[in-house]
Length: 211
Image (spheres, rainbow, N blue to C red):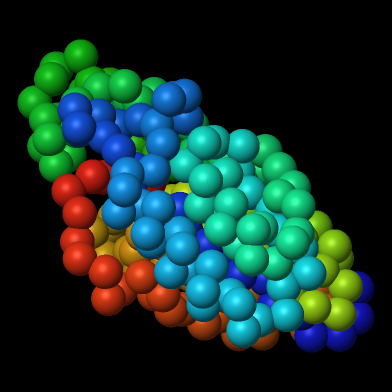
């Protein structure tokens, strides 16, 4: 497709996760009260954009984050499985800030190759499916803009891929806050610029983890 089109990658809001588990693709994890406010803050930011296409991961937290945008714009929420959270063999286990995963010897086999990574879906596959989803959203947006609601690791993998960075990275240094927007500016088939903003940054911090 010719022309300049912006595809916004919106990370979902905070999730209600009182037990602190790595929920991954597990069902039943919805937005917390703060997460719902974060989603509304994101929708307010998009109110000034020419959004023509709205698509989300099939997981509940992503669909909920897309809902305020749909309500404000009148757009239907399309669903794209390529925007889903990364597959992870450790889902369902207590996270405890990540350290608890390493203390359990039964988990050690999953950490043998962090470059791939060995605990789940390969970074390269995540980046490839996310790029395909973003290009599909770009095409569906026509002369406007698109919003893709996804998850932290898939968004980070795609951003690092288009910026020519190694996909393996330190998760503590990710620039992808809850309800943040990573915007890819396409000129034809090429991403020529990446922008980043946090529409919900002024809201108080919560305690739930999110991916």
